[in-house]
Each structure stands twice: as structure tokens, then as C-alpha cells.
Image 1 (cartoon, rainbow, N blue to C red):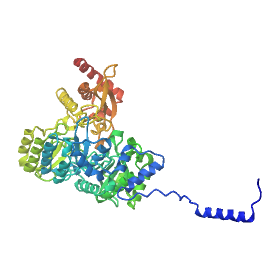
Image 2: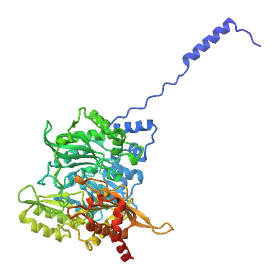
Image 3: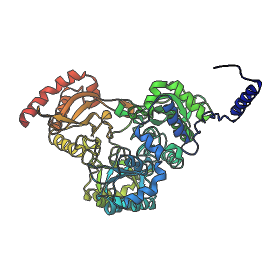
Length: 589
């Protein structure tokens, strides 16, 4: 039964409702996500922005966020002391300290160093020889970033090795993973009679800037920077994310020595660095490189490792927008110069990094030592260090061609130096094939490689030199996988490892896909595919046939191998090679 409330009841209900309203708990508005702070704030903010936009961070970005590798050093040394090799997350983190777990290729660590401009002192090379024998496999590798690697390192050796390396004045910090790799420069910096600019101070300044700026670690992906001084032996700066090229501006308000800025090189992704129209004074290079990388930190892709390189930001934005963002970081306008006012680069010499050559300093010489695709034993390293100390100026210059140069050798000590180098098992007399023979670690020491590149490179050289007389340099680059550490796309002949099917059961053998016509410096170009799935055992004969076709059909000795290949479409080139290849195949069978 219903009826109206009495006046007293109404007052009671009104009071009850008012009290309930006064005591009601109202949920506060959701708190805004905290703004990242600290040295890693730009990276965290970039991750947050890409997640907010609907992206999903790749594992490497999550690992960096969960525990920054520099904050995990104590755990690294503690776990390594027990003999433990890391799993995927820590294998990524430990690369910030220069250490790579290369299992299953080798059940051990590989250590990569940082050597700005690739220049060591003799005592440092001798010290590395001692370290590789005490803590590693007794040998070193010269890399395609004018660097040193040490392999077969036991986990228990990690802490003493890193500490003893620093005792030598060398570091491994940031030499792997999502960081700025070893800084390269002209290998003949300061001694080249034709160079425009000595790159050593530039590489050194950038090297120490990186070491002291934590924000420059943990990029969306690895990053390469190089300085070319415009001399006889190029730095391959066009294969780097950032390249600075020394030039002479002939007139106008910017007349003098300047650096041309080129961006976006990544030869493994079929691209070389492109001119931006921007030039700078040498003393401005570090600040400009820093600003470029900070833009990359903010906008590089952290959701797709295959596109997490500077090239892809440039492709998406274009140079104008990107350079505008760099100018915002710098707080000033970059300098543009008309290329018509820039003198051409002096010609390079493809033999400059090997053999004996007079320096710009009267009476002194450099000696380029020909090495077997970068491998050097501890005894050999000590021996070369002694030659550098006794006969030269004490510098040992590593090159991107996987050899080394001893500088400052007086005319009167050349014979002694060459004899001592020969006694160590090396040559100072370049051959057209071995002067430009480059190979990555291969599957003997890298889990990604499909083929044993160093072994096959030497087999190719031995085979070809015994059968074909070449009178011009021909660079042959062998790389084991798509990472293209040996930069196969810029070789005259490039080979990339592949598994080659041999029957219907799916069995495969080691082999290569082959490209031709690549180049660098004034002939910079990405090579074109010619053959796929060539068995490793057949690769020497294919290279031999290519060179025979070149000698038979070139316009004359002045036509380079690259120029010869570029005159022909790949199908026509294949047809020219076929008559030379068929008899070799028949003889092999």
C-alpha cells in the first residue's frame, strides 16, 4: 500500500540523502603517466610515444627498459665468474660492454674494442696480443671498421679482460648492440701527401664525446659515423649513417676546408649515404653529429628492427624535414653551399693501404701489411708491434680493408722493416686480388653466417692467382649473412652466404649469391645481382671465369673491372662469362 510521506518522514529522507552525498567517495581522475627523467629519458619518451601511437616495442627495446645494460655491470661480472654464458636478453645487454655470446658457433664470448680512427700505439697492440693469449683463442681479427676483435673468451675471463684492456688505454664500451660503433677515419690521416684534412682529431673528439654522453647509447639500432680526409685511401664514409667528407670550397664566404655532410648509408640495405647540401667547419662536426643522433633517438623505429636505421627516417621524412629537426636540436641554421663551388675530391689509390709509400714528411714512409682476411696471431701481433716501435713512429693503423699500416719508417730502415714483417709470415707486396680481399668472421665464429667466409676467401685467392694474371686491383668481398659486415655490395665482386639445395630431400651445402659492379669513394655504387646459389666449392671457378671474361672483353687496361661490368646488363654479362665458365665446370666434374 502506498501513501504520501509525512512531513517528518520527508525531513528524515532529505537528511539521509544529503549525508550520503557528503560522504560519497568519488574516484579521482586517472593520474597522468610520469614524464621520464634521467639520462635515458629521451629513449623512454620515444618508446612511450610509439606505444601510444599503437606500436609494439621489439624485445631489444623492452630489455633496455627493464634493465639498462650499464646498470647491470655488477651482475655481468658476477654471473660470468661462475662460467655462465648469457641468454638472449643478457646477450644483448652485455654487448654494451663489448661482449658477444657467439654460441653455437663458438661456446664463448667475442670482444670488440673501440679504436678511434683505427690507430693503436705499439704497446697497445702488444698488450692485446698478451690478452688474447691469456683470455682468448690466441689470435685477433682486424675488422671492417678498422677495429680489433678477440675471440674464444671464457666467461671467467670477462672481468679481468675488461679491466686489463682499460689498463692499456682501450675500451669496449658501446662497441655492440644499439650504439654508435667504432669511429672510422682515413687510415693515412696526417701522413698522406694528398689529403685535405687530418681526420684524427675529429675521430678522437667524437670518440670521447660518445664515451661521456650516456644518452648516445641505446639508440633504435646500431649507428655508424666516419670521417674522410679526402686523401689516397678512403674511409668508406658513404657506407655509414653519417659521413663527413673533407672538401675544398673554392670561393665565396665559406671558402676553405669544409666537411660535406652525407647521410643514410647502409650498404646491406642497398643504399649509400647521400649528400645533404650541408657543409660545416671541422670544429662543428661533433655538435652536428650529436644533434643528428638525438633526432634519430626521438624518431627512429623501435617497433621494427628491419627498419630501425637512419635511412628509413630519411626515406619517410625527406632531407628537408630531417635537417629542419636537426637545426631545432642545434638551435641554429646549418650552412648550405652550392656544389659548383666545391673542388672535386682528389683521386684515391686502391693500393695505398698496402705496400711501401712515401709520407708527406720527408724521408719517412708507411708500410701497408697484407694480411689473410684480418687474422693475426698473438706472436704476429707482438712482432708487428716491435717493428712499429723499432723501425717506425710507434703507430699501428688498422684499416677497413682488414690489414694494418706501420707509419713513420725512415728510408734507411725500410729494408729491415720489410724483412722483419716477412719473417712474421706477412707480405708488403700487394697483389691485385689480396689487396682488396675482405671477409667477415663467417660461420666458424658467427651464428648468423651461412658460409665459412674467411676459408673460402683464401681458397678463391689461391685458385685465381694460380690461373689468371690480373693487372688491375679487383676487390672481392665475402660476407656470411644479410648483416653484410664485409660490405659485399661495394666490392667489384661481392659474395653473400647462402645455403644451396643439392637434392630433393632438402639437403643444402654452403654457398653464395654473387653481385658485381660495386664501388666506393669516387666510384661509389651498390653492386648488382648476377648469380644465385653458387656452391662454395664452385665459387673460385666463377670468380676465375668473371676475370677471364673481363680480360677478354674490356676496352683496354684503363677500363676497370667495375666499368666493364657496368657496360653490360647482367644477362649480357652472364652470356660473356658462360664460355669461360663451361670448361671450368667440365674440368671440375
